[in-house]
Length: 402
Ligand code: SF4
Image (cartoon, rainbow, N blue to C red):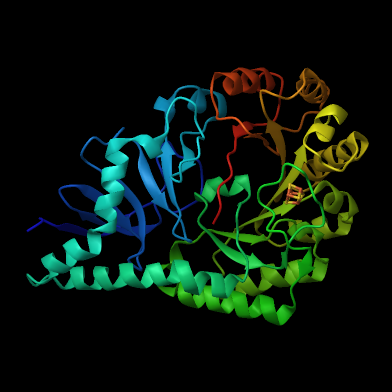
């Protein structure tokens, strides 16, 4: 019979931030078995797992997201990642995709064994529960219930897939409550892997309210641990102002302690949005993080990635980002820039020229997002050359969904 140790109500981090370890929610439970350690939310949702046999690194964990996706948090030995970006982990999906050139957790024996042990967990706990530990029965039932949530309940509530979360939400370890005000995207970028094929569509107030009511009710027992919300989906900034304020307001009515809101915008929606919208957002006594998919300032690269936009328009968006970050302290507008070893030199030259001529503002991080090539030496070499010329924080971002 497997020996099971349960530690209830352990304390995690109270606030969002960048930590040198995977941040845990304010309160969580720990279950230890000979082959693995599992951290559960207060609703007994498995959130972190670490194996014991042939486990690659004691600093590293598998995280299970709200939709049940398993991500391996690779530390890369706290080398360039920590020193260049003040980042300590790269979340790598465990679906075989090669995110890092030097390490693929999908191929690690210890990771495979741990995932197998996780799948067998309900059976193991059920047997141990027969010995009379009441918590184990509750945990078994919860694991089954969360599986149903991932596969049926969450898709029914959201009525869309959240394939990517804004990179800034890493400060909440991607633990965000989704509030979907619009779906689809008006643009049609050739390189895009996150668009679900639907056209841009805004949701009605009653659809937004129902979705928020249902998600907060489904997550009621762990709601206290959330510190952030995702106003989605792919280009929420394109939605009308009143609808965006409605989405923020309805969530704050249900979860008043949420102080961090994350959303995506496109170059078009950012340029079109009136300054009065951002002024009002800034006055709402919360932090708003908006990530804009700029991708490149270079015409050759924009053509290569089939992004139907002119470099002049991207320049216009960049200027607006500088203005917003300088005017509004509760707003943080960050930029996404694609990175690939196949890009022409002009992609990097234009970016560096821009950074060297920027004003003083150090707000609004630049997220370098690898495209079509795993992160390796080429990436860190380029990132270093960007970092030393930028007054803004520079970070690595590989796509993480809900
Ligand atoms: S704007 Fe973003 S989401 Fe829309 S098609 Fe382009 S890359 Fe995809």
